[in-house]
Every structure is written in structure tokens, then in C-alpha cells.
Length: 136
Image (cartoon, rainbow, N blue to C red; front, side, top):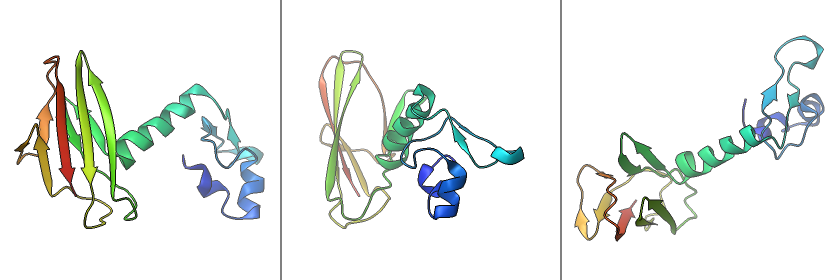
């Protein structure tokens, strides 16, 4: 329901949705003659969903209980991408390499040159630049 493209696959759906097909609506009406129509587009709450979708569900950057993990879900056309994440006074340079042109899955996780079998690290504000390399 949250993905606007799902509401504009056909002319009929687009006419029912009634708002921009490239902007997440904060509301989608569920009852009455407005059911299926979007509302509150370009709203700051809806933009935060785009942020979450991009960072967490596409690039795969997740932080839970102080632990950082990367679990990408990307196009197989992507050979690599980079994220620069600031934590306190520390920088985490994250480089994701996709030599086998996969859509998801992490084969190897390196932190400052050391392979991490758990494929996640505890974030520490060590006032340093830290390097994370992910091999898909």
C-alpha cells in the first residue's frame, strides 16, 4: 500500500489514487467513495518512509541495539556502492562490493581489515575513521 507505483500501474488505478504516482502519500483512504485515494503527499512523515526504504531496505544499513549490519537488496546491475555513516565523533566508511552481481546476501564482512563472521559490529565512538567492506 505504501509504494505509490502500485497505485498507478493502470490508468484506472491512477485515476482512483488521484495524487502523484512518484510521492508516498501519508494516507490512503480505506472506506467510502474515496477508498484507494491518496492524501497528504509531500508530507514530512511520508518522506521519512522513503528514507527508511532507501537506507534500510535497499542499501541494507540497519542499527539495532547498538549493532550495525548491512543486508543489501539491490539490483544485480550494481557492482558496488558506498555509505559514510557518522556515529558520535567516529566515521564508518562502508563499501559494498557485488562482484557476483547478486541481488542480496552477504558473503563476507570485514571491519578495519578483519573478517567478522557474525557479519555485524558493535558501534563504538572511538573518534576514528573505521572501514567496513562487504562482499556480496
